Image 1 (cartoon, rainbow, N blue to C red):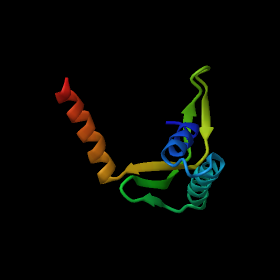
Image 2: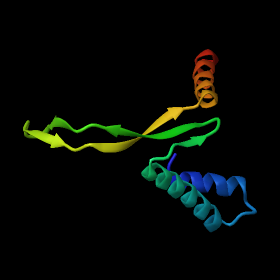
Image 3: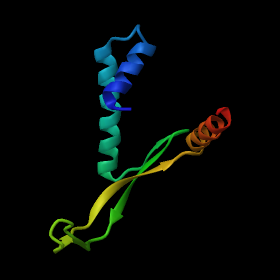
Length: 101
């Protein structure tokens, strides 16, 4: 689901809210999650999962096009750890769809 699909889905579920207000809410939530990760904070959404910034050490990489070695600087990357409730929900729907066939 893309951001615009999420906004459209929420607009359909909450017709009493203006689409531009829903768009502003969704953008604000995503901006705040990104800002928290940029500060190095952990973001937890109960029942969904947690976004955690992780440090990757500097390393020597390889350019796949030329085969040359290149140095890759140390960097921070976002990592998502799925929550128990979401994991169970996804696994249940995958199992139930197998038995429905």
